[in-house]
Image (cartoon, rainbow, N blue to C red; front, side, top):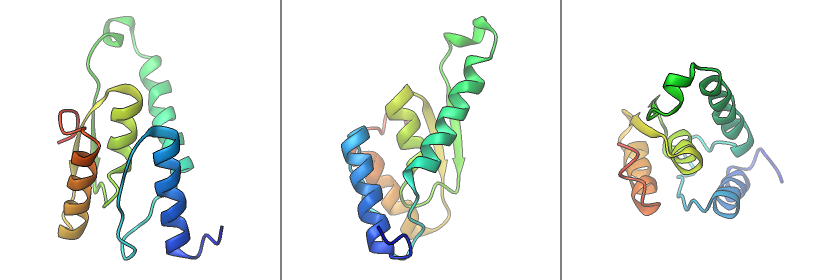
Length: 114
């Protein structure tokens, strides 16, 4: 894979998300295309932090906020899919916002991601 080619990176990202997590996403070439391993590693790191909390908090609902979620909305999509976490995702770029909203809706995660 030529990681300098945005089309190749987008194809790899979309394929990994579909095959490994059942997530269907669309990302415009002119916006940031996230790499899945780095984003997944961050989610696992947060899981580890949550696991270290007191037992009283372990049964509670987990909320996250993603400031500048980007077109892919990858952190909320992964967190909601893997762990059932709730997210608030923010985005100021109109193009990224519309793609992120579409990605959440087409994966039926609107109840977990706002």
